[in-house]
Length: 107
Image (cartoon, rainbow, N blue to C red):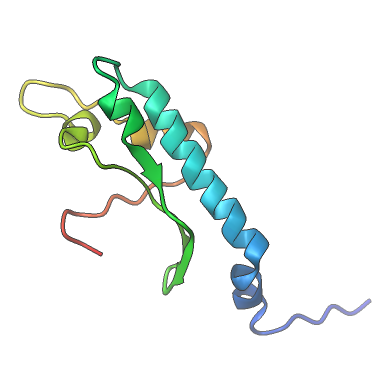
């Protein structure tokens, strides 16, 4: 039995609409999971978690889960007086996903 693979097989798979849909669904699940992990005061932080559509770049197919809340970074990374709750990172870990923190201002 012979198996012939296309040299561009990985690129073909990454460009499939179903691959993008899976990545988008994973990002949406991370955002939903993060919302479930944060404390509820007024509910603003809980409602602030969102996810993006999948895009293909040099590092592969990616979608992002994020929060638009002004204090979201304090819950994720903590402060001098508060330990980090890391809702986004914990939600991703629960799904078995890898996280890649992007520094502030990075694209």
